[in-house]
Length: 621
Picture 1 (tube, helix red, strand yellow):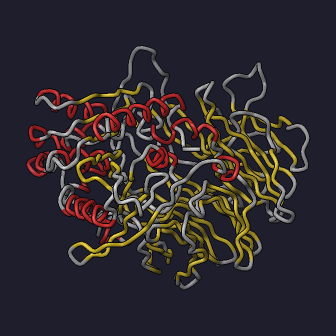
Picture 2 (cartoon, helix red, strand yellow):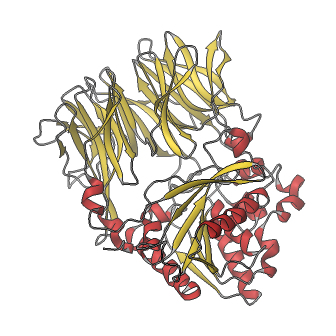
Picture 3 (cartoon, helix red, strand yellow):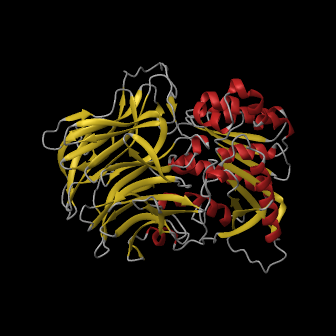
């Protein structure tokens, strides 16, 4: 059976894995789309690590924030009480089963919890103002945030909740945005950005000391962008970037605080997703090459690979030499695995349940060289492709990832399999600017549309050379975010593609910088200056400048709550193409944000893919 557009609705995704304190059980969140209700449901499952059995733990439909109390019980946030609508209620449940027990009321807006020494630490989304039905008042930037909504005078704050007394109080500073917190090994660290006018990308580092009931500020705001912090052997260490060498996207290094001042312990040339300290080592999952791997730092800052198998390591936890993680292996869906004594064991069967009857076209990874630089490329042939058949030809789609500091890897993509099932070659690569190869490779400041464009065109040539069945006269190009920028740029600089689908795109760096949630911080560093000092360069790098050259029929997809690449971007590009007589169509998706392709409401994801397939079929088949 071929992969159908609606097949993603059957896929269950594990995340947020945590081991019990004794390491016997692992709990994790499972999220699944519901096509009828047009929403996502989530619940908790638990795996007995000793015997490998997995079972559903909670029966609610919106339960995903949880924390272990001890080796037998855990807390989770939910609301099963019909008469307490809108409240954040705390429940306790045993891994042995039974009914969940209501045991407290948390601050409204609680999003994440962690339990330590009888105290629950909660990240709470709070408003400093009374919301008005017909008005919004902005007096700071950013005033909105993609996937969140209006954030003017809205903050995520860290609370301390006493499980015995039910007392809840704020630990983070007034008007401070808590970006992350870590409650582990008897310590609580958090990063916080205090602002009332303009938020800076660098944050301060704080520690809450339970014994003295005090909050210590270890690092002032404005020094580092911090990815993780902990205390090992009594000393404070953190992974952070001062952003002085490579700006906003600079990878973090490992520092230790000595007499209140940071000292560099180790350079680390990879991005960090999550971190934790166990048995005197700091563990991180990082993008290395085309994969997400688990690595660790010893006390001297030396780095070793814990897991370097192809695929991904997403959420993870460690106890007593045993590692439990969610991740993707062998071009399958995300599963729950353990690693013990060098052996990986898979506990779940999400892939088998969803893909066992599907024809999945294999991803072929290869490298090629452009101007002396080796680059990674990938090709998914059409389902049923027979290279010995020299008569049949196929259309193809060049897809370009967002970021630009992101990667493609040899991991399963439902969307790409949809295209392959409909007779398309799908090919993609990691050009300069991508993640996984260090700061220097990711540095594309003020070079967008130059070296990346050249590499993408060289890659297209290479794929055509390797696959004679790919018809060079029936090529499409598409991408999201930065990939949408590159799609717009490409069609303004070549006519080799016969269909284009820029999504959540960038058309004009000037408007992008001054209308979006990260524009004033991210885009100014990526383009080498702000609008007033760098106007000419911004316009030169804007695809809109070259829209009068475009001949390629283009389907533009935009979301009206995309605050990362706002409505103005897609609308400007669409208007320009129509003005110049180019076949163009704009799909405006209401109530969705920048990540609509992965996190949008199921029916809207289906409509999006139907629109894309219809457009490509019209112009490439």
